[in-house]
Length: 157
Image (cartoon, rainbow, N blue to C red; front, top):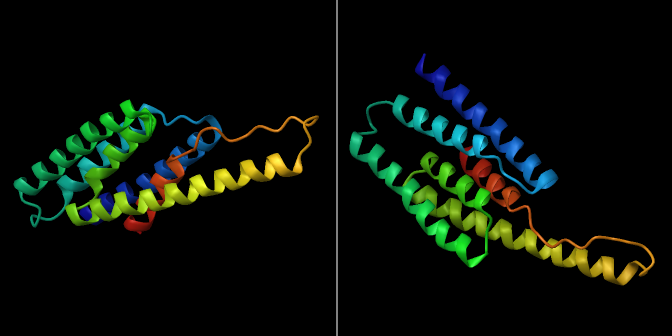
């Protein structure tokens, strides 16, 4: 029964990550309900794990959620990431062990850099190959949810 619940939580997480990715691409918003559901599923998954997860480990993982959120608030204040991105990163951090959390953050940064590079390339192509008579929008914001969900999906699969 525990394996079934764990499987349902993982598949639900993957579905929510797809919805987050779509919402970030389409609307440049990551709804709070998605982040709360991801956090709740992560907490449920953590609780139903076998007894190898002692209460100290559960508390440590919850501490990491708060730590990532607090550090993310500073990054948000600097204007580097949006609030939804920070909430998504913090809610996903409960799913990872401390070592995997660092790997998640590094992968996310690498994917984000790649995404920024694609955005710059796209903007340069728009400037070079379109006339001023045609109205083409430059990309001014990045759907960073793509980088977040891609790195989380790679580590969870």
